[in-house]
Image (cartoon, rainbow, N blue to C red; front, side, top):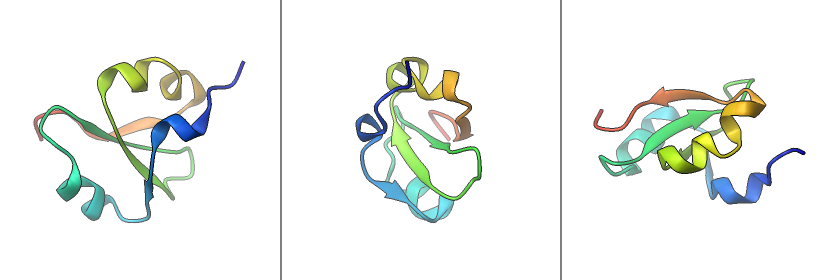
Length: 62
């Protein structure tokens, strides 16, 4: 079962913009094409996007 992309919230088209908006406890992930970036918690990432091939662009604390 594929995860619901709406749980990722607003997408960013710039890694820099997403990195500036995230809090220290959040991470920035990107889709397989590295076209859209999302700010999520570790729990959200582990609950679906990780299994769908999304990858971490900016880790927590960075």
